[in-house]
Structures are given as structure tokens and as C-alpha cells.
Image (cartoon, rainbow, N blue to C red; front, side, top):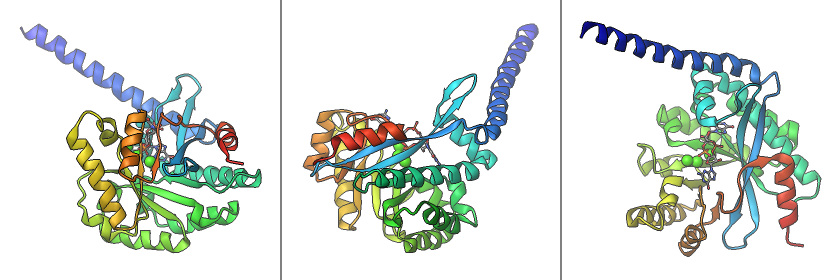
Length: 279
Ligand code: C2E
Ligand code: CA
Ligand code: CA
Ligand code: CA
């Protein structure tokens, strides 16, 4: 019995080490990914449910690892968060997204809103407001076309500081969206407390719309509540026509999801939008 226990223990630590090594390796590689040009922004269009026009895109980061190929953001964003690498990566994301949006304008596309994800770590950085002002100035993008997506968790860490910061960002003219709404611990009072312009209904509610009356009640409630507070509502993760029709019947403003298209590189996103343009 003793031997068996020892073997188990050894196996356990070996597995732990393998896991730890993999993470350490990714961490080391991520440090170099930015300078080696392995990071790229992809864009997923959002459609207005009343006009069917493409009214915005969400910028999503992609990492093409030289050996492992595509690494999921679910894997590398947490590492970037923990190590602080997210600050430099977040700057890159903002810079690339604003430059691409401005380039689409230059090539004749009607204005679309560019939404960029902000991590909690970026929200606590001292230079965020001046960073964003700088990016807007360099790109020449109209500030009202930039939207920052922030999660509830990021605002909860220090609500006072976050509220002040978000007011400064709003003063620049940029929009603020609360991401993954309904999945965190925050209360409804956050909607009133922070100067938000958009609520994004999390994919978990959208996924269960046709099968779960509770998910439907929550989605409907979020839409009514957000509209009552004069906020725009975007539903993420829309995959079926049934989900879309339900959201339309509830007067949801915009949808995003595989039903419309997956995230794609800048050039493809440009072509997608140019072809759909109503003449
Ligand atoms: P998120 O902000 O909630 O982004 C939406 C995620 O849902 C994206 O995953 C998108 O590809 C995926 N998605 C969109 N439509 C559908 C659909 O119809 N079905 C399904 N199953 N999925 C859909 P992605 O690109 O893997 O990103 C995962 C998360 O990583 C993001 O969640 C966000 O939290 C984070 N992330 C990605 N890019 C960035 C970035 O540039 N900065 C920061 N801070 N976080 C990022
Ligand atoms: Ca997002
Ligand atoms: Ca989201
Ligand atoms: Ca989500």
C-alpha cells in the first residue's frame, strides 16, 4: 500500500510539473510574441436588428504560436493578466484596432463602432486615459467610434477608482460597454453607478433562449432594464435564427455571433462590410 501511495504521489507531482512547465513555456513565449509579430487582431461584426446594417465590430486578439499554432485567448489572456504583459498587449490591441477602423473609413466604408476589450489590469494602470487619448490622436479615429468593453469584475475591484476613471474616458467621447453582463457578482446598481453606454448580454443566456424559460426571462429583463436606463443592448453568441428572432421580438438593438459570422482578419472584415453595404 505504501508503494502504491508513493507511485500515486509521484505521478501527481509529475502531472503538476508538466502542467506548470507548459504554462511557464507559454509565458516565456508570450513575452516575445508581441515583438515577433505573432499577435494579430481579428474583428467580429455586429448587426443592428432593425436595419440589418453592420454597425460595429469587436476586436479580438489572436496568437499564432510558431510551434503550437493558434493558442486560444482563453489560454493566453489569463497568463497575460497575471504577468502584466496585458498592458503592452492591450496597447497593441487599441493601436491596431483604431488604425484598422480609420483605414476602413479611408477606403470608403460608412462609420462602424470599434469595440476593444479592456482587461482589469489595464483599468488599474495610471496611464490608461492618456494612452487612449494618444491612440485616438495618432489614428485620427472619431472618439465616438471607439467603445471599450469592460467586465463587471474589473469594476468591482475598486468601484470608486473605476467610476472616476470611466467618467474620464466618457469625457474623451468614447463609449463604454459592460461585457458578459449577468455572469458576475455585481448588482444592478452598477448600471446606474457607472457611465455605461452599452450592455452586452452574455452568451450563456443567449445559448439557452429557446430551451430555458429562465434564460429567456433574464435576457428579456436585461433588455428592458438597459433600455430604461437609455443604454444600448448587444447580444453576443447568437448562433441560430430562432435566437435572433427572439431577441428582435424583445427589441434588442444589436447581435453578434456565428449566425452572422466568426471573427476574421482586418482585410476579410473590410470585404465583408464592403459587400454588405446598402448602395
Ligand atoms: P469576450 O470578450 O466575451 O468575446 C466573445 C468571445 O465569444 C470571442 O471568443 C468570440 O470569438 C466568441 N464568439 C463570438 N460569437 C460566438 C458564437 O456565436 N458562438 C460561440 N461559441 N462563440 C462566439 P475569443 O475570441 O476566443 O475570446 C475569448 C475571450 O478572450 C474574450 O471574451 C475576452 O474576454 C478575451 N479577449 C480576446 N481578445 C482580447 C483582447 O484583445 N484584450 C482582452 N483584454 N481580452 C481579450
Ligand atoms: Ca468582449
Ligand atoms: Ca463578452
Ligand atoms: Ca462572454
